[in-house]
Image (cartoon, rainbow, N blue to C red):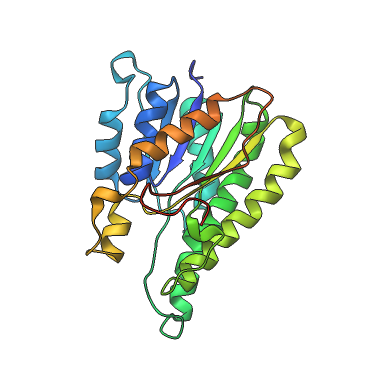
Length: 241
């Protein structure tokens, strides 16, 4: 069994997931990294601390939308590390398409990755999390977990769904000491944003490292104060808009 608390991070081959993995490794966690790209996962693992002591990041190339994959991933993490203390559901996809042009396949694809996969993964991880002394689930949502922007109907619906079951889970497991958080950021400088908005000025975007620091703050803040939702907007945006 790992002597360090173990954090499973999905979508860890790039962007926010990679930054979260590095930050958590520096905060004393052993990261278990999951994504479809094995090459990207190896790069992320190399950036994490602990490799020299044999407690570095574990990598699990996997497509979480495949039937049975969430349960398989949980089993592999427990077999390799012997414990699971933190789950960060970060993997996701975005689509920029008008409501009328959004097809059923588009809807199903975003729902499968952004809402269904983290739901099933969290359900599979709960028995292990119940054994952890300071268990937590952090779901990476979006500003559209609560708002609605043009050209993002399916993406917005999937992030609303993620936020919805996050609220229910938090209520159901709070008495067991498992803390469940939702981070809802605005524009973050990742490949997803670049794909949708190649014209955007990245100088004003939130950095993945800023989101990673927020994750570390949430999981290390184990006093009497509990933060359910952390909404993060760009400095150039109007506060409380």
